[in-house]
Length: 458
Image (cartoon, rainbow, N blue to C red; front, side, top):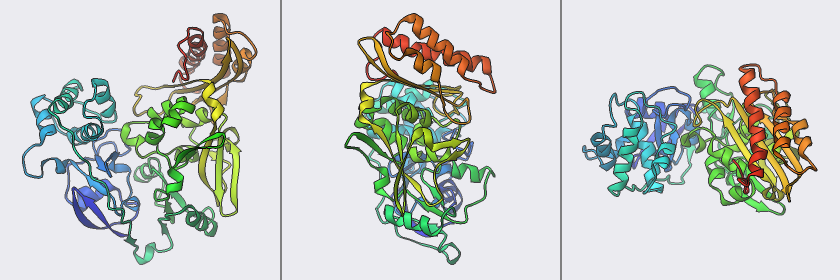
């Protein structure tokens, strides 16, 4: 496919297959070798660039999603041949050794300082949490970003033109679709039921293709141009989150923070900032991974999944949506339109916990989503779900039922934890994961007792 792409402020004509990665376009087609190939799956940050002002891993972005966009690479920081303020701060702070991670670190820092010119050290650590360094340790890098901020470094970021025009090669016509409206996408699905691979954030698909897990799709459709799928709004008695909303969108949305704070907490822990900027809630659901973070949260929140086809809309509960391992109720001519969360959820105490070796980028060992309605010390309702330890998220039924209708006590909290521990049967590290699950459930109720719970514990 042929299209125009703005790279470091210069419009470039690109001719690339729809599945070609942005990383390869930059390095091999344009000769911009600052972005590096590291892990190839979004876990190291060596390939990080800015796409329309947002930090992304270029190894996860297909050409299909690039027409009319703007890309900034590390080369944009020194167009006059001299280091800019941020680069000089890295040099002065001893934050550069082998240099392999440096381009990605610089772009992550640039993205942070553009929106938060006075970050705390914790803010900086979060911003670079998706970027691995094996030389300097991280303190000198944090020092460098802090030094640049103290010097008033606050860059302006570039955005795309909005001109999404493209042309397809003869062999691509009828196989590559970039709809701009939901109705158009549904018509395409109706014409090719089961034959079109949908692309949202690409954080699973592109990695699977690159790692040899799957071949390039015969037909593919990008959903990123459909504004309706990216909306977050309150409608009637529901908080409605479009399937195309990214986890960054959810983590920072005031309505989500008020009504479903544990979903916002989950979103803020869904990989690194670069992954959160790409990954969508619809994609996390459709993938149906046993280790997906959002499914247990949505089940605990009693959420509804809205499915769309040319025939109309269909609603299923989050619990019903997952039929078995890697299988959902999504039909061949449907896509996920949105997720609906009852506004009543804001009156519940909520908690999300994720356990794993690296919070910013990890397949969870344990996820726990808790929602309880508590009045005057009595639990009126409770939903406890775990993830990553069963083919689909598991309701901790006995622990949930135990507390309903009772005044919370420490003894009751500990008994709920014991029942939760008995309920899970993880295949690997069973002793650790069972014990951790029990302790997390008990801690949820103890925090309520100790007055540590406002609207959320997550």
